[in-house]
Image (cartoon, rainbow, N blue to C red):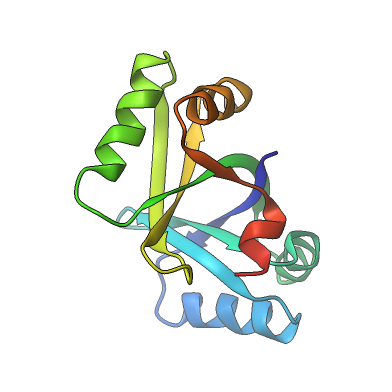
Length: 143
């Protein structure tokens, strides 16, 4: 199972991120993970939230460009080398990673990684066959 990720086009303006976070909070949506990639004039804010459809609606009402994308979420041990092993598993399985971001889990000794890959189904199969846990939306929403 895959996870819905919000990608939001954001102009680099003072206070813009605060506005977006406020709209999400007002909609009763909890942010679970985030990443921002920026250039001089704009950025792409990527979010994993507990209520993606509600977040999309609120952000579009704000006039923002928002896209929902299915991504893969995996859980690895929080120890040196665990991430390297997982990425090698993907590479050996012929899966290309476009981008990723990580965050710690509430589960002791675990870290979670969100991956945008060229083939979600293949990535999930490769990871699971390599003994790496993939997560679904419920796993992330209830953390």
